[in-house]
Image (cartoon, rainbow, N blue to C red; front, top):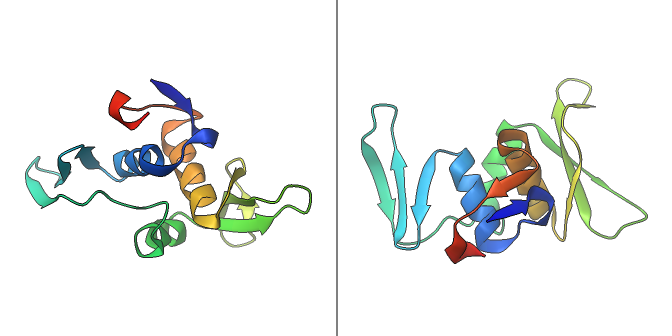
Length: 122
């Protein structure tokens, strides 16, 4: 099923971020593959990029995602910027938290404005 990136949340958002990170994730756990196609990591715990700053934070820093607060709408917004000068290079994305907004922005920059997600994550 296709979902707008701006509406991704919870497991569906985490799955999409994992896809961007090269992580294969299914309902039984997740795998990380190296450049040679060998499985290098396995865990039963699913990644929580959109709710755990320890997982999402490094992506925010690496991708130059910056935040702003919109006085009109209560959710936080995030966009990817080119340093120095913080010129926006990708559209702003909103979310109920900064981490969710940032992960939506990251997914959109890699996968576009719509994402095909597995049915079990709907």
